[in-house]
Length: 224
Image 1 (spheres, rainbow, N blue to C red):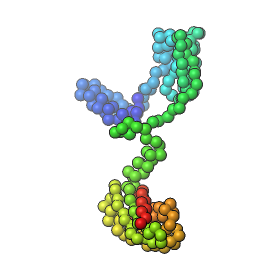
Image 2 (image 1 turned 90 degrees about the vertical axis):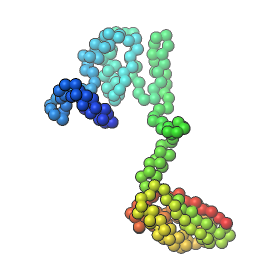
Image 3 (image 1 turned 180 degrees about the horizontal axis):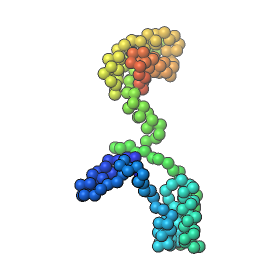
Image 4 (image 1 turned 180 degrees about the vertical axis):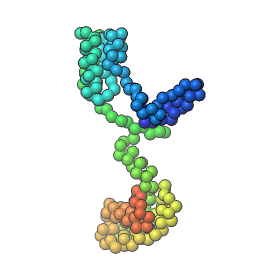
């Protein structure tokens, strides 16, 4: 059978142990015409159903069409009053007095847990982590005069997860970003949200010019 992705190392280890024990191992790599399904055939499923004769039958694994076909096969082998319940992701099953029934729907899907605290991590947070891991993170901080809107200091850039070339480009990126911010009117610099937006744009533009990269930028605006 084909090796399931992710199991290649375990399968390779098993094949090596079989060779070591004196077996001759046949694989599609050596004999492409040889193949066996990893799933039971209809006759084998019939044999299992006839042996177990379940009062309730819930087919699992596969697409909806596979589940339905499995349930129909069970109906041919196990007579009424056996209950055949074709459930999809999110279906709630209830069993009482030996009888099963569909009892509504529940939320479903993947839940990612933090490695250290086991608390849920939202898809949005996971995307942010993946993006930071791929592009690195630059913290950009500026100090602005509260009354006049004058750029007092910065932007000051600090990088995390950057390459050596990207770290070397930080001073030049800071100078270019400062030039861009100085072009903004004092009125625009009075708006923190606008300053953060323009700061991110300026830093990413400068990095793009010097390194062809666009890191994640975390803007910090302080006023004195």
